Length: 218
Image (cartoon, rainbow, N blue to C red; front, side, top):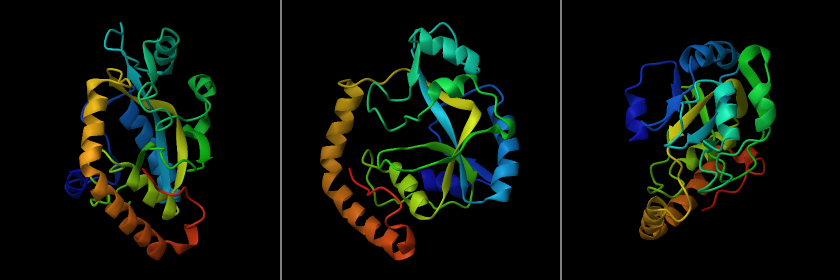
């Protein structure tokens, strides 16, 4: 479905997100301005943005970093999936990022893709590779794009001001997680076959980056 959606997109820049994801005020205008400068200069740059979860009982929505910081302090917001699958969306330097004022809209000009389970959310040119559709649902079917982007030599830069958030906090042991584990068991054999084919394709297409990126795994 992600690839089908992209085929109907006519924009220069793309952002791949779930329908329930919400964005900080002015996200589109602000990030598009950064993209026009940064991605025009370097087509293999990815503009990574932080993502958070907001408690359903929260008294407000995090329109900007000031409100977000207050909500984090009140435990009304957390880093996305940090109570469910820590590490997948963690980005270092959160406290500094909340208060910094960087010219050009970029917080960290270069971040290393050094964790196989890191699934950064980003804005990019529409010309990036498509998702590998051999990967089954719930087992690296989204992470695989990040793996290929690393192998293809793309770079990851963190946006300094804007972010995305999601209402509701997913927790370990929840019905959602139990369902995901059930789906993963069903799709296990398909995943291992897809992973083998993927590794072979990466080494054929991008042999020069074989030692530069983390080894893909479940």
